[in-house]
Image (cartoon, rainbow over all chains, first blue to last red; front, side, top):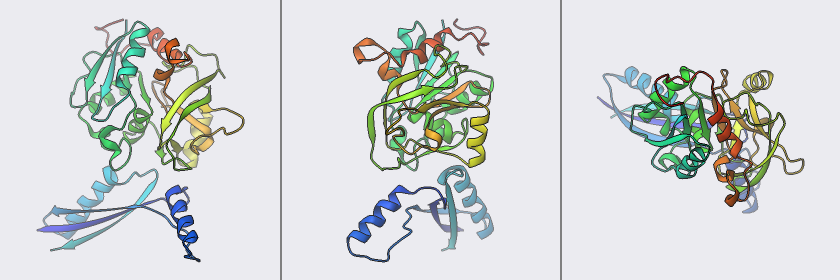
Length: 83
Length: 233
């Protein structure tokens, strides 16, 4: 079975996110009053062959821990979707 | 004479400068391609600056899985000296040979200019030529040099004297927002060192300063048990 994996990687809360701050300033200067707490992360999508949804999730989690996210500075969320 | 491996990844761009700086102090330097699995009897490994794999995903994240890094892990575990410069420092952090990570500069811009740094740990294979507290002027050139780590890790680095180099000028001290003004650190054993500034760009008179030459002179003078008893020295 092929699964579609959606990974969302975000800078860990509490760590300075200068990209988020710069975009926040740009939004406010464009007149989007009330925009705040902007943070910028990364979305990764991939297809994964696995015997079942639990196996697919476990495999995707290992990918995140080993490569897709840096455990020192980032947190990740996973969504695994069957075709 | 030390045999010195200078690693080359797709996107390395300080490899020639680093090789030249090592040759100038009388070492026997040679390139090792990232797909090689053997360091060819190297006593010392230098990981030069650049943009390995285009900095895709995160700086150093993909280089870390290059075939050569297995050999670097074994070399480091056996106590062999390893110096990562700029992108090399980022690779060593991604490879978990050094703690923490290097993130986007606080003010976002790529910073390329000389900075003043102080050498704090003179016991590593790359810093014995310096006096403790020595002030140097070295070039930096990076977009992702903001050193971050868990507070407990920072406390440990400070308590164990593992901050090798710190940004030191009184005003405008910290060019990238690094925690504790950290410009370079060592692992617990002291044989693996990562630094953001580029000593190889400040290693001979024609470059305007020789402030960085001490890193290579230290390496050449290092006699701490070479891991390759057969080769070199």
